[in-house]
Image 1 (cartoon, rainbow over the protein chains, first blue to last red):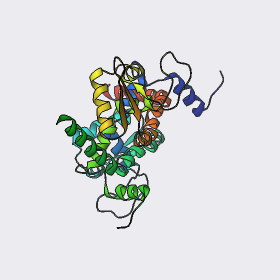
Image 2 (image 1 turned 90 degrees about the vertical axis):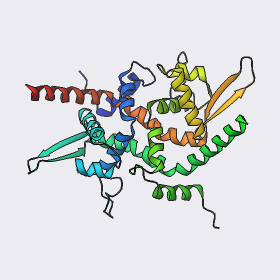
Image 3 (image 1 turned 180 degrees about the vertical axis):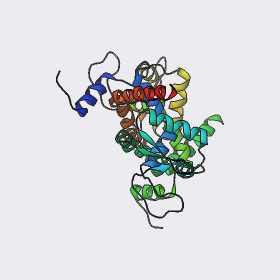
Image 4 (image 1 turned 30 degrees about the vertical axis):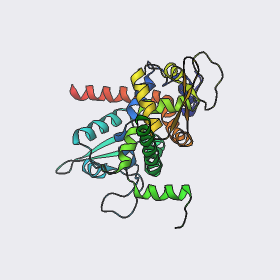
Length: 150
Length: 150
């Protein structure tokens, strides 16, 4: 059997999987990763911006659960746990338990996770950098809708 | 008042908005766009792949509601309507009504929508091209979990 490289395998997979099809497994993977908590966890583990209280921006590095929880304001313990477990199961994050007292649990991006983070980073940045434009469009739209209703 | 270019304005907005903060409006925009239906509608309007029955791949072009509905299998009328309305309100899609009998309604990406599509396209493609790897990781994870439970 001829061996193929990882990039050849991905090119074949890209032809064979089609997220436009409801029955394709890639539709469910798209659903799984199209999620604001996934975007924020990957951004945090990918070193996007300093942690609260820090002034320097670090690169990718392992973070403890409590650090992730502080970084991503408003995330519930339950939602963060679920998101991390799903990312671990899908091979995007490794969970390391260090036998300190109390036990230290840290999370880190895998190569696969870094590859997804390269894609997802764009979405968080897009939301931040286009916020003003979107707000202007919303005002215009709501104004027009009110005009139509009169 | 000094005028600034669109890219300068975006650089400022990117510093001022931070989706890590629950109270920041960009968190809600990130939530809005981190959505599989948004990814699929943008991909369809962006000309990602031929329509069913077509063999050629076209570039971006307007699509009628019924064409979008066929392209994105499994989407309900209600969900497609809601998604298109939100994208229109946010300035990413224009809706054009042509007074034919019956009336023709078509949707097209704006410049802002094309900019988001450039980012979102990566997610759909990532899901399709990394599906095999993710499935392998899931099998491994589930196997390890069963091992632990024994």
